[in-house]
Image (cartoon, rainbow, N blue to C red):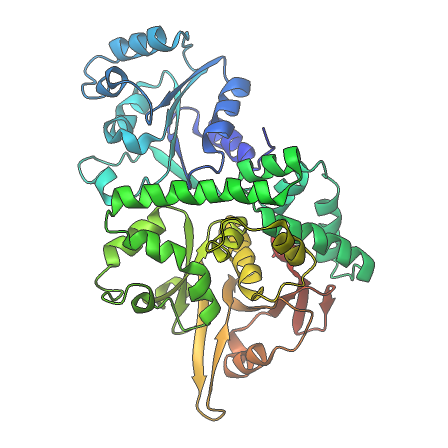
Length: 442
C-alpha cells in the first residue's frame, strides 16, 4: 500500500469526533479509497468490518431496510463477516455506499447508538438518483480524496527527501540552480505521464514499461465510461469527458458543448454536466466576471472548463485515437520534445494540485478594447483580502503580458502574481516565477 496523506486526516477525525460523527470519503473510482480505509481499520482499531455494497449479498443490503433492532443488525454483521465487534474500539466501513442509500441514511441512528465508528466511501455518490429518496445525515463529516500528488508519488518511488528540501527553497524564495531544476523537472514530467492513480504507479514500479502503464490507465478510463453509460445511456456524459483534451486545446472562453454535442447547449444538458462533475472524475474551473476577494460570488456556471482529475489520465485521453500510447510518445513527452500541445498537460496538473490543496478553481477572461484582443488568466486564488493571478506556461519563457495587463486593470486587488513554468525559481518583487513542481507549496 502506498503512503497517503489522507491517513492523517482520518486520525484527526477519529480523535476529534470520538464517535460523534461518521466520515464520508468522496472521490473517483480507483484512487485508493477502500485500500486506505481498510488499512486504517487494521491499524487504528481492535477490529473492523468492511461492507462492500458493490458486491454484498442481498441479505446484507436488506439489513438496512429496518433498523428497529440494532442489536440484531450488529449480530448479523458479526456472524456474516466472522468478526467480533468491540464497543468503542471497532470500525464499520460502508464501502461504495452509493449502492445502498438506506445504509447511508442509517448513519444518523448508528452514530447516535455510539457503539462503533463508521467510515463511508463513495464514487458517484452525489448523483441525484443516489440521494433523492433518503435523508442525508447531518452526522456525516465529508472529505475529498484525490489521486496521489507529486510528493506521494515520490514516496512511492522511495524518495522522501526531495519535497522537504524543495519547501525550503520555496519558503526562502531561493534559486535551485539549473542542474537541480532539470533533475526535479524530469521527475515531475514522469509524474505527469504516469499520474497519481495507484494502479498506474504500481504497474510502473513492476514493469518500468510505459506502454503497460498506459493500458492500465485506459482500463480506468473505460471503467469511468461504463459508469457514465449507467447514468446516461445516450452517451452524452462520455462524449463530454472524452472531449476534455480537445476543449482545453481550443483556449476558448469556456467549454463549448455545441462542438461536442451539436444538438445541445449547456442549459439543455445541465443535468449531464452536473452528474459528470459529481462523479469526481473531472475538475471544474469557473470563469469569474469580477476578480475580487469573494471569488465564489462572481463566477458564472455557464462558462467553465473541465480538467481531468488525474493528469496521467489526461495524457492517455489525448492519444485515445491510437490503439495504445507507444513508449516513443511517452519518451518524447518525458524529454519535452513532443510536437503535441503540452500546455494543457501543465495546465491540468496545476489545476489538480490546486484542487488537492483545497482551492476552488476559477479563471478570468476579458477583452481589452484598446488593444483589441482577449486576455486570459489561467487561475485566480484568494489570499487574505486580495487575489493572486496565475499564468501557466509549458515553456521556459518568462514573458507574461496577460498578467501585466491584468495587474494594470486590478492593481489594488492583487497580492502578487505568479508565473508557473519550467525554469528555476525567481522573484523580482512583483512576480514570483515558480517551476511547476513548486506549485505544491502555494
